[in-house]
Image 1 (cartoon, rainbow, N blue to C red):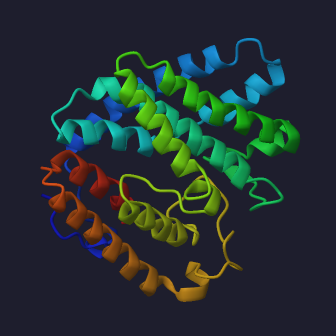
Image 2 (image 1 turned 90 degrees about the vertical axis):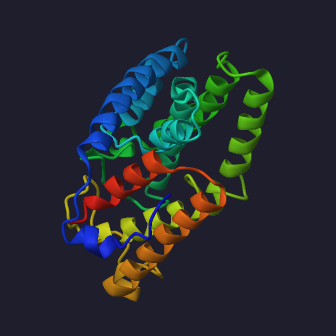
Length: 259
């Protein structure tokens, strides 16, 4: 079970076992390779500039958190994680599309994403918007064509993803990850990263004017929120009667970078 986690200990230099790092690295390589094949297939027949914008954003270096959460959930439920690779890639497409739109001048007006120029600075706002829509729609197609999963499961996944992306979720700024608690922990961590420590590959101090940002509520309050949300995630796993060993280790590894 996921024990009570104190992110402050992690921030002070708590260690993460090498096994989860190696496991994450192996699966991340598989995810990256599959994303490249999927985006190539999705770009067939579209104009070169649009396809290039899709590749530029989707294949940029990333942690692939959402696919890994799907895969590690399968492991903790003693299921074949390989059957969820395409579903995880679909989640990454949705996430990437959301970042492309979020970075636009009409939204956050970000200049950097994952260590390089935001997509709209390379391809323009119009192409970036269309590329994000294309990736979002391709995600549904990836799930629908994933024949290693039963048809009823694919229908259910498409329905749940549509709900998460719609007004009840992403479109309302309430994107969820493994559980709502983990999603909120990521938001608190993102606010802490807005200080620019450690280097994040994106703009720092971008949220200075936003209500609830670290500049508004203070670092101590955000760290307390992070602690609370991770402990809440542990409670969810226990309620589900899940061993949670792999997820526990992976989630800890995500927040260990704050040391």
